Length: 404
Image (cartoon, rainbow, N blue to C red; front, side, top):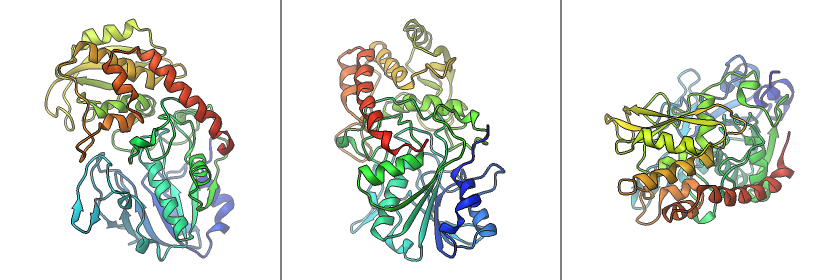
């Protein structure tokens, strides 16, 4: 079975929506059709529209910028169309506020009013990975809000949730920990497509944009990306494979600690460690838990950048042996619990960048319950049960916004 994305459906059936209009794209290099032709090139060659602007999310249009790295405005070399960054420092009266890791003023993440003056319709087409902390969906939410204020047509070209549209995991975001890695109350693994999220954001959270979602054809909720027949374009520099996307909803929590999440290696998020971890002991302890769908192996690695660049780290590599039963959020909590038991003196939670109080881990987790409970020695399995009760409530709430 080959899935047709919203991009392909647009050009097959729906070009009348934008014919004769001045169009802006919110997109990056992932917006290709099954023949790997990009949306911008298709619009220029096949649609009767005026492409006036491209807006690029985190990592930039070409995906060359690392996480948290600011992206500059540029021009598309082939067409001369301006590419405006939606991932830049916020500028206030007193000057630029340089804050890393997406904890930043809202206006730096949405198209500025003057950038939208020419635009009559905005089209969003970016491959998401199905996890709350992945910033593309918040770029979508903020640009929908900007579009609503200026009464612009907003079109979402839907794409698959690569880690299936059924599984939901993790605490629903407590809005006290709202940031650019979680702006609205959804769980870590939400089980929705970007088009479905757009409907939820627009209606439940009252953005009230003039929204049109172009659904896919042939996608079913139980599909993994490798069952769609579509080419895998890595969504960002440190998500090279579907295997990475599968572990990401749990292993991303290590970004909020002083443990390396494997950035700077060829297995980011599958390889976890630090110089002070006993990898053999950790692997043994985790395997004794008999966690579903995964085995752990002792590894040593030297990151080329990010945490512990140039320093040998010891830890574990996750080997997922059954993706249907694997629960990345539970696995991450169990890993954190074991690390706290064995390496409490060296282990640290990272403070929120640019903030005197609070922890970045809580923004990623969507709550401070995990951090506090693990510090007290609570059972990770009991924590997970509570998280899943929260996720189950969301599962019911999202039903009315599902397209498939």
